[in-house]
Image 1 (cartoon, helix red, strand yellow):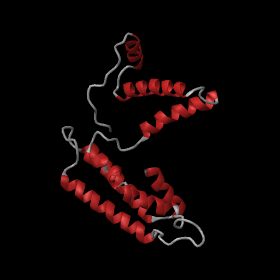
Image 2: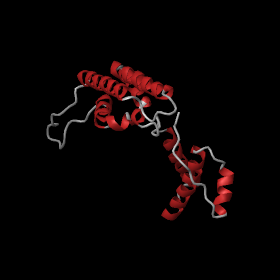
Image 3: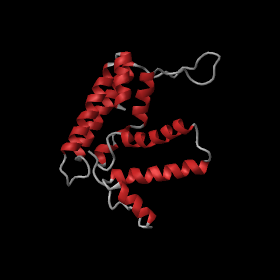
Image 4: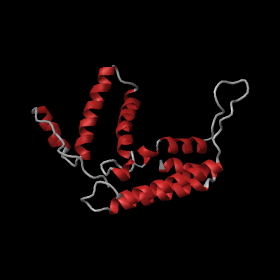
Length: 178
């Protein structure tokens, strides 16, 4: 999300995207500074951040009105610009975008998920392709296991040894991402 907002700001010169970036970083800072015992921000903080998020969306819509008029002689509606598409996504997925402040188990970024997917693409690039769907499934299962161990700060080597001894690594509880 931050990458998309930065791109809109740099490529289209839209002020609302800078303000949205600042808000998301401010929320993330508030989450990091919350007491360890908390599992979410206070209801007052959540409502205030949501109000500000909505205001920024309204500003973005005012700067980039969403198109609803159909294109002559073509099906569907007129193609939106990248800033319009991002505003529409922010509106549609507001709950998901801001979930990290209401549930501290949800990470601020999806970098870990992107990193997990990247390994599949690297393997595919090196080998050219996977030979079967079963091969892809096995690769993903092993990479997922290793990723889970790393995310739970366990020893990868010990976890792999345990898997061969039929004593697989089992995460106990979710921990707070920072």
